[in-house]
Length: 288
Image 1 (cartoon, rainbow, N blue to C red):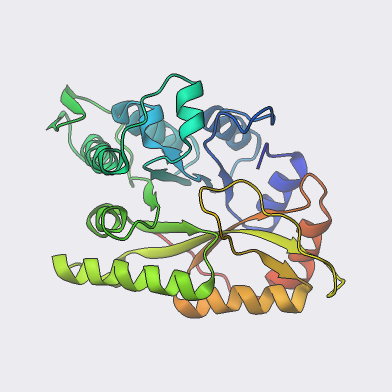
Image 2 (image 1 turned 135 degrees about the vertical axis):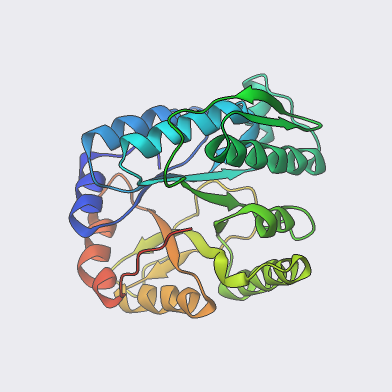
């Protein structure tokens, strides 16, 4: 999503939906707004809506600053902020903005230290954490968030990232996978949970999808937007087909779906979803 327009925010407020902001600085010359600044502005304009980041690139910001920003947003939104964070993947973006882009093993190790520092600052006053990549010493994050924001970790690397999810996440997010591939990744996550003795039901599975919604069942699927993988799954079709596709993910255990609409900034897909797809699903409030 390039930006949140008034139509999207109004729909979120009217239908009790959450609003999400991606964290990217550039896709060539596409207009993009900085994630936390845009989110804070949108949250101030639309009180009562639950907002989340989808997902922060952990190395773009010092983790202690992320903890402080998240605690502030949790306070200002009345406890309706979800901190989504991941290891980062878009190398050209890092290089363009002058950030180091270490190997994936290092980025995931940094992610794990970052979430440990974030948790510590939310729960301990003062907090001291010493890691290989990051550290805080006698750091205060007041007012500490009560309750703490939901911590959602994005990514599906089976050997590294999903282990971090198993150890630290309230929610897990993966994007653009087919139902079969998502099910396999979820199985790997559950195996990591069993290895450390964590109850798999304490992690909420979530899924990010692009939706191409049309009344014409013969309409061709559009090209998917940017992503870091080659083969991507698109939720596409008329309301019945899209409902069936989303129901398949729900049947796998997905409890929260973040959607972007392929026809944005047009509101036709959004309106059709709200009128003919959303009413077919029950609503359950998810907490970490």
